[in-house]
Length: 275
Ligand SMILES: [Zn+2]
Image (tube, rainbow, N blue to C red; front, side):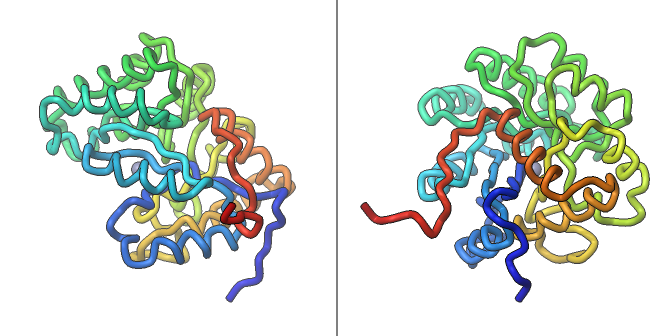
């Protein structure tokens, strides 16, 4: 096994991983342990469907370093049933998630469901505005539409996850107070456009993510992705930007904390006592 490479001061945060996913049902605790040993000091789990919400909240109750977000993912809008927006509102008011997410528009697989996606996205943006919460965005082939909608709301910013837009679009997100998430895709050498972006974007707007169990990096192709691989994204970013490791780790961590106003509730695992 690899030696622990990171000291406490340069812990990194996985700003987007689906640890609630059934892919982790068999070894979730081991995955968390390995990720923590690799220096991952926080895990943001965004909601996808109504079914996911309670599982995510339960995980956050069990683990101080897990931060829950709640939302309806555009990709799964086919599973939407009437009443779920109201349930989301009630739960978000009671459970204090760090964000509404992941929400957005996904026009990658054609534009079926487009209308429902748009409707759910707007309702959830409005909810985030009313609750004073940031948002975690999932956007594919729809950045201009998403940016237009963001401008019509008064939001606390957030994160545009797995950013894959243009430099111009990146600039607009930054102007709206959003950080941009980069993950496993960056580790593939063929991702030259993405790498150019990750080099050009000011460090103060970058956050690291895995999107586990999806989007595995170059070293884990066709395998389950995992937050324990987040240091590989950090290493890639260091190689691309040619900047100091400590600085990139500390700044991207500070960025997630700022973007999602994360509570500081993360004592080192070894110091936790039963009292
Ligand atoms: Zn996701």
